[in-house]
Amino acid sequence: MFITSREKFDNDSKKGDWCFINNDTYIIVKYGDKWSDVCVLPIQVKESNSNWNWNGNKELPTLTPSILVKPYPDWTDGWHGFLTDGKLITV
Figure 1 (tube, helix red, strand yellow):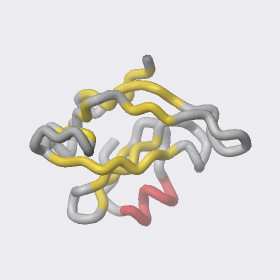
Figure 2: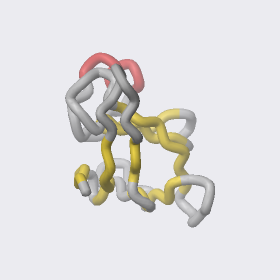
Figure 3: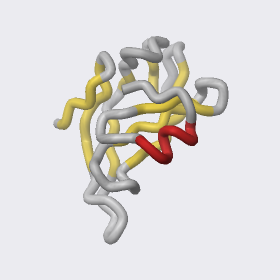
């Protein structure tokens, strides 16, 4: 679900939520149930090789390519999947 403020995201987010920050140049995605299961991704609407491509829709965002969060001991078990039409899809 789209959360409109960083403060609310930090306090109330659940798995599958997202929030745009920094004038919509980054998206925060909550991919798991732990408070630390989040990733911050640079995005842009036009196609790029250095950012995730975003369809421009805040309510139903789609990012490409896939999101890969590598496991890090005592922090995250990792995750790999897509954010497509506002839904997290695990690979």
